[in-house]
Length: 198
Ligand SMILES: [Mg+2]
Image 1 (cartoon, rainbow, N blue to C red):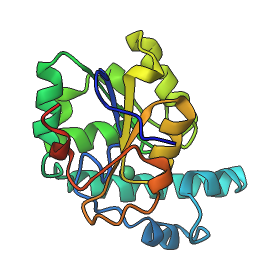
Image 2 (cartoon, rainbow, N blue to C red; image 1 turned 60 degrees about the horizontal axis):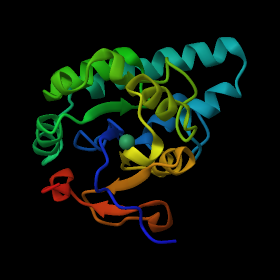
Image 3 (tube, protein in one colour; image 1 turned 45 degrees about the horizontal axis):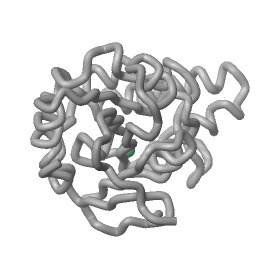
């Protein structure tokens, strides 16, 4: 399959943590702290637990995520790309497995909140999390956009899988350049500003 082109795409949906921000989430350490199975996605593991246990771990997860949100820093090159896309009049959205409250704090802390109106932030409080494509469909519905006009960008497999499932172009963003899922990505970049000039 040949890579989908990014030309002419006007709807840009970003993963937040580790894509717009410098990666600091050690999910394996979070799983260990919460007593969840290692190597398995956190939100899905919580769904397997009895309600009371899940609730207690969700509270602790929020505390951990809040600490990380307070330390958020914009990834190098993120603001340059966002500013260029906004100048062009493109749509900019967030699709994150983080909570709405922590997404807001993260974006404020790293200085990127102004690029993403509240209505264009889709979080785990708004519907099924990635890799489900529901959040992409939700944003495109609000924007009156189509998947073939959209790009999903992220640093993890779930971001790319969600983009693929929705029929969008996908960009894998990973500062280390390891790019472990080439079959899921139309472009691989170490920094978001590698996508300039558009
Ligand atoms: Mg991420």
